[in-house]
Length: 220
Image (cartoon, rainbow, N blue to C red; front, side):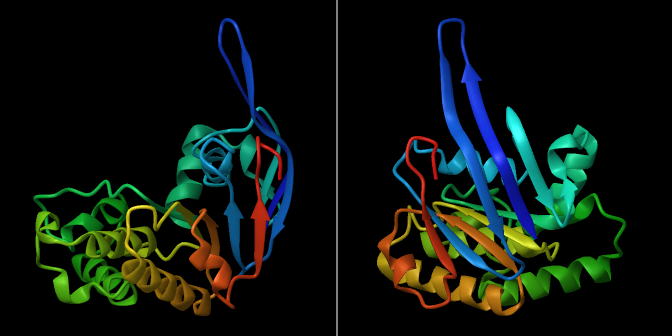
């Protein structure tokens, strides 16, 4: 489903060139859960941003079901992200004064949906993320674990094929990290392709993880 071929990312300044990624080759099959490990600055987030088409590589190909996403225009890259990618981050980026369910509106309002269809999609995502019981509460009243579950619900409300998680448990305690992991397990059972960047040892202990990769100084 996902194929990265000779991916390089170079950041340049007036006096320097920094190789964030060096000749990355990676294939991820549909329905797999893949963990990418590495310390801060190793290139994990850059790699995930390229897979999500938030950032373009300096060179190389990113093929999604045989289509080279790198060659897409900005508007078509945005369409790819909207339809096919859900992004879960360590920072919450939620609207504190809105309710949980209203925070799920952003990915839906640009689609031509009826209010009934929007409600059905929100309810399904909230249920899968195990936060439906808090849907009327403001974000400012939630715990860290509940905010993370809201982020998950927002990421999956459009039913994306690919779910990308960037250090998703960095701000969670062990109990909430384990709850998050169980949610990922449920998403895999729904045939989602999931890529997780983390240095959390808990992920390596899970039997549903298909593969673990190490990235160091931009090399895998």
